Length: 249
Image (tube, rainbow, N blue to C red; front, side, top):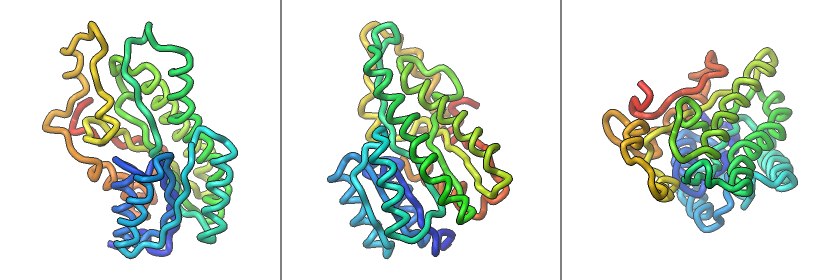
């Protein structure tokens, strides 16, 4: 399939995990890519891999929590490639800990990247997507749908991403812009390496957030993002698609 031929796709968080897998999937489907991440080394590796697949790729090291950087990133992508058709927000960070021990600084840091960063990218991209009849795919989480212990900042940020996505879908749907989200769960990505139960935590609670079958790689989320971002999903708007192996079934 070449569902993204002649389409320009901006992907944040492209250095690893779901962002990297999505970049590779869309490159294989003919997309022109504008990739970003704060991890310059990982980003360069993703760019090389996508270029090897025949994609035209630009990249920029960006902290999505920084407004001027996001403004410049979106403007640069449009200037470089001439248009913008799809935006995929994947950039995110995670921290585990007891809620009563979470500092305000840590809470704000995670909200800043996961929620404010998604907002900033969407805000800057919307005028260009309205010009092309494009769409947005945001990355929420099963943490937005049910209580995940020890992830107060992350869960709050992803719940915000879910609400933000639905707001954009309703606000701009009549103007031809779609906005959807994926809600991954039990996905093996580098962010999972940060998982460590805080002292005194009840390990039994972990079973609430595990897949019914097995954990899978980020490529399964990339497949869902590719669907939502393509014309196959032309009649899908304001949806949050769970990709969690039945975690919340």
